[in-house]
Length: 114
Figure 1 (cartoon, one colour):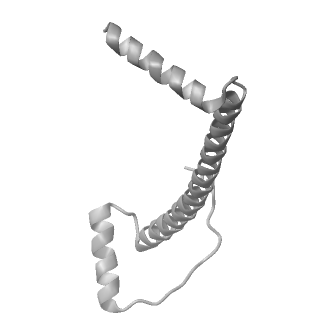
Figure 2: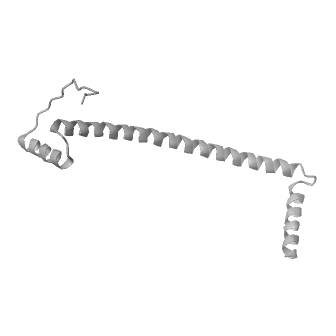
Figure 3: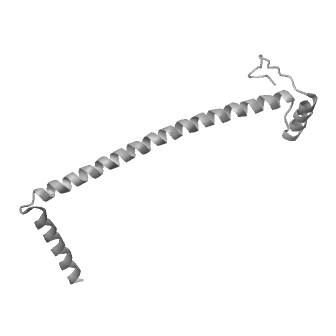
């Protein structure tokens, strides 16, 4: 079988005899072809995990920005709503007292009909 991605670079590191025995044992348990494959896979998993953590951190920052924006929009909507209510009341002849009196009277009438 042809090698599609030949490995040309070498990475060396020293291990104790105990560490080497542990590596060989893990190779057998994991079904790795060699200590090199085991080490390569372990480093690749570390790299992938680091990338997931960075992506998760970026996602968390974006979520915080969105939460702040939602809070600001909610505040603006509440402000606009209260301004609209005030403008509606101000446009009624007789002012707020008449509006609230008529509203309360209508509420009492509808409750009496029930």
